[in-house]
Amino acid sequence: DGGITQSPKYLFRKEGQNVTLSCEQNLNHDAMYWYRQDPGQGLRLIYYSQIVNDFQKGDIAEGYSVSREKKESFPLTVTSAQKNPTAFYLCASSIEGGVGVTGELFFGEGSRLTVL
Amino acid sequence: DAKTTQPTSMDCAEGRAANLPCNHSTISGNEYVYWYRQIHSQGPQYIIHGLKNNETNEMASLIITEDRKSSTLILPHATLRDTAVYYCIVRGGSYNTDKLIFGTGTRLQVFP
Image (cartoon, rainbow over all chains, first blue to last red; front, side, top):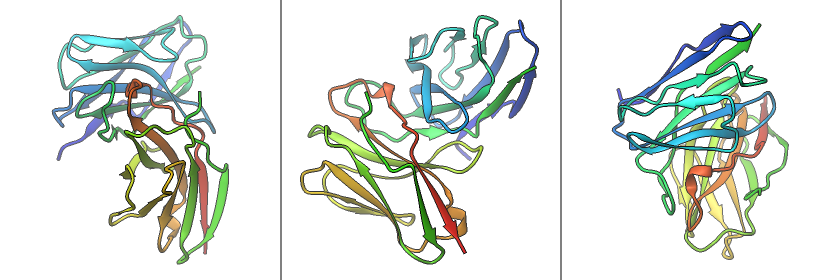
């Protein structure tokens, strides 16, 4: 079945450690996105990629890094520079991205990161 | 800037229709209205979208006012499994749609 797979679902990290969250899609979508969600809050955009080998910062990119070497993969690294990394992280994709696009977003089930 | 405004929370009795309003008074002519919902600790799920006309699918109906400044999502026969946070967003038009703004949404509680 087509969809988006995020892993791990739960992750614990010690302060000062980098951690990478995986996001894979087999929908053949060009655009992929990473959102962060804090308790009781909406989704905030971290990074997005409209095409392979290209990505753009969202509203809260500081302390995060991404890569888009393959169309189906868009991993997110939470670095030690991220001051408050404990959150629920959501990956999404859409057929295409950019100005004027209207396609729906497909979301993964999320990864919950806790910093100890 | 927020593109949409929604009530923080709503209640609905099981089996009754749930009507969730959304205000998008600054919507432009080529922007679509999308609705998603998020059940606790899961990824948001697409529900429905529309431009001008009312839309219906197996999950819900979307009623858009003639001036397109507001819309209502209707769940015709709410069940306990419809308890979730519902997000109304706009997409398309001349702004970069990759900076979608998901507000805090409406928390719908369906009770027996």
